[in-house]
Each structure stands twice: as C-alpha cells, then as structure tokens.
Image 1 (tube, rainbow, N blue to C red):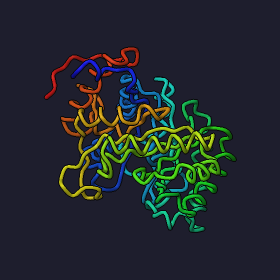
Image 2: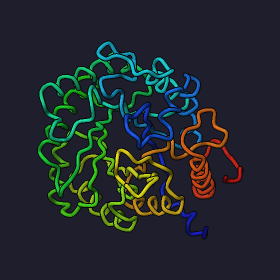
Image 3: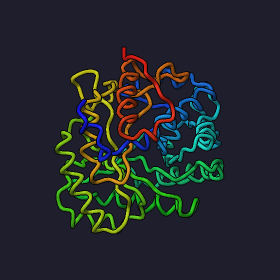
Image 4: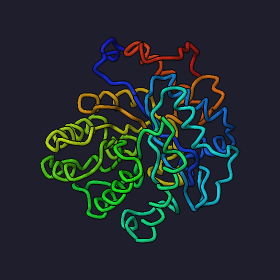
Length: 338
C-alpha cells in the first residue's frame, strides 16, 4: 500500500451497528454463534470495538417478531443463552468507554415504510420505548436512540417517513430529553437537490443522520458515493442542523443474488472498504459501519463471529489504523492473515 494510503485525511471508523439476533439469512454466519454468547462474551464483543478505536455502538434491534432481547414484560424473551444482552452490552460499554444508541424497535415484525404509522404499530412502538427507557434509561452508556426503520430519499423523504420521525422523536424527547437521536436512511444514490433536501432536514427533530453509502448493496461505487455525500454535505450545511455521519457498508454477498434476505453477508475486501472510507471522509463528521460484528473479528477472540475472513478484514483495517491513526489502537496484533 502506497504512502498516500496512510493519509490522515481518511477518517477512521468510529462506530458500528451490533445485532443481538436477526431473523433472516443475511446474518447466517453469526446468528447461531451470538445466540450462544454468555455475558462474558457479550462484554468481550464490546471490548473488541473499543480496542479497535471505536466510540459508538448502534443496537440494530431490541426485539423482533414479537420477542425481546431484554428483560421485557411486554414480550416474551427470545431464546438465547444470555438472559439480558442489552443490559450486559450497556454495562460493558460503560466499562470500556463506548456510547450506545439503543434501538426504538421492533415490537413485531420489521414493517414497510407504509406500515409504520398504523395506530397499533405506533402504540406498540411507543410502549416498547417507554419500557426500555424505564429499565435502562439510567445506564450511563445509554447515549441516545436509534430509529431503525429505514427511511429513504427518492429524491426526498416521503411523508410517511417524516410522520414516523415526528412521532418517534417526540416520544424519545419525552422519555430521555436531549439525548441524541440517530437515523440512517438509504437511497443515498438519489441525492440530487440539496436545497429541497435541506428543507426536510431542517424540519426534522433528528440530531444525527448516518447516510448509508450503499456500496455493499451495489447501488453505487465509492466514486459515486463521494459525489452523493458532497450533495448531502451541502444539504446539511444549508439546513443548519443534524450532524452528517456515514454508514459505510463493510459487507459483500456470498452469492450473486444480492440485496436478498436469503443471501448471507460476507466481509468486503479491504481494498474496497478503504476506498469507501476515503470517499466519504471529506464530507462527514463521523464514519460508522454496518457492521463490525460478523464481518470483522479480532484474532483469537473469545467472542468470535463470522467466517475466518472476518479476521483478515480486521487485520487489514488494524494495520492501516496503526499507520494512519496510531493513537486509536488499543490492542495491537501482528498475526498473519489466513
């Protein structure tokens, strides 16, 4: 790798999504493993992201399909080894200096954007948020909320998405005050009119928008991502609100059938991931990834997840980070890739 690849102009990864469980084949290579995690392994999983210099974890879901990943009285418990993974993650995050965005979903199945505002779904969502805030709101690592039902622009947000954000933001403010609210929309590839988009952003009670770079989903190349984020930067600056983060996709697909719930996610190549980081760096405040878990894995981890090539991607990123941002690395490795 050439010296310019070590430029500090390319920002490091500062946060990642984390899934306790997911209910389709995209997480095939780590779902069964994380289902058996002990409390100590969930703590180790949090420590790993701290060791590689990250500051944030974003919990994908606190439940799905009518089952919860926390100590709920509203829903039955998902059958996993750890009795309270959300609580363990929050306690470990406090120990290792990680800030956690806790998901506001899902009480039932993952809804379409059109189903978001059905009265029963809204009632159940707000009840779940209230329960989560009651149980975990005093945990110091509970930094903010993540609204995980993905909105999109085409080229602007539909009204159904704006209504969802208004309802959910209002409840989050009631429950936890000024804690940051994060939203991660897609169709970034359709960012065109920064003026019209700025008006929508200005009307949102959202603190952070982590736009998906869509390179893993193959909707755009890193170079196209760069152009899209330039538009988004202009929109955010004009709106005068909402920090602009990137949600960089660390995954590829195991088979040619991409963007399918039936196709397992596998690690992207480091060459592609570096180009993604480089593309968004000039325009964003923070880079996060979807995701570390299952796609990057510390060598000899006590909480392994994903295929063996997850270690390879970890080491490639780790080696670059040691050169470009050495102060961010807390655990140093010199193992050879498999």
